Amino acid sequence: KAGVTQTPRYLIKTRGQQVTLSCSPISGHRSVSWYQQTPGQGLQFLFEYFSETQRNKGNFPGRFSGRQFSNSRSEMNVSTLELGDSALYLCASSRGQGIGELFFGEGSRLTVL
Amino acid sequence: AQRVTQPEKLLSVFKGAPVELKCNYSYSGSPELFWYVQYSRQRLQLLLRHISRESIKGFTADLNKGETSFHLKKPFAQEEDSAMYYCALSLYSGGGADGLTFGKGTHLIIQP
Image (cartoon, rainbow over the protein chains, first blue to last red):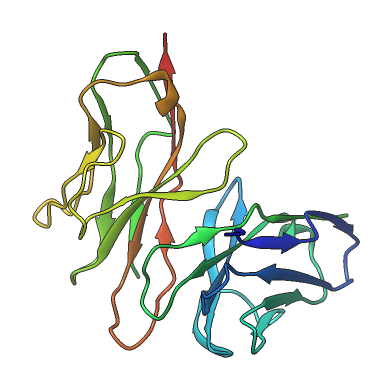
């Protein structure tokens, strides 16, 4: 069974630009959640989607958004990038509602210059 | 808001010695607690969860609601245990999923 796949793995953007990150969950998993990992703040929850609906959202500004498609694939978007958005963005999938076991991808490393 | 504290950023022990990775949480309800581990060049993965009450790779963790702790223990450390360990908390809401609240992590180094 293929694991959680995130693309792109690395990207560099400049301040003010926007970025879209993609996540393909494990086949059969309907829940996808996103986390931001930085050296200072550690792992922080961004949002979680189940059956194309955002179920929960962390404490991040509205510049951070996401969506989930009918095939459970998910994308997150960050608009008007700031230097502080430089981070590793991790996607995780799980079988269904409720927290269950999360299966993480390798992450997308975003650098904002 | 809930919080997870892992007081040690780095823990170094010798092979064969006991290991205890500390985790304290702040939440007045009944959370679900997890330990996730990230080995070098591997993905973050679940090690164990308190409701399972299992021993995984020789590790155990007991939820102490009185002390609001969920320390991870192993009686005899092995070199392959060297990794980054994260304690995490979820507020079970029943009707949906809450994101995990992670601690900052403890880097465990097992010396030969």
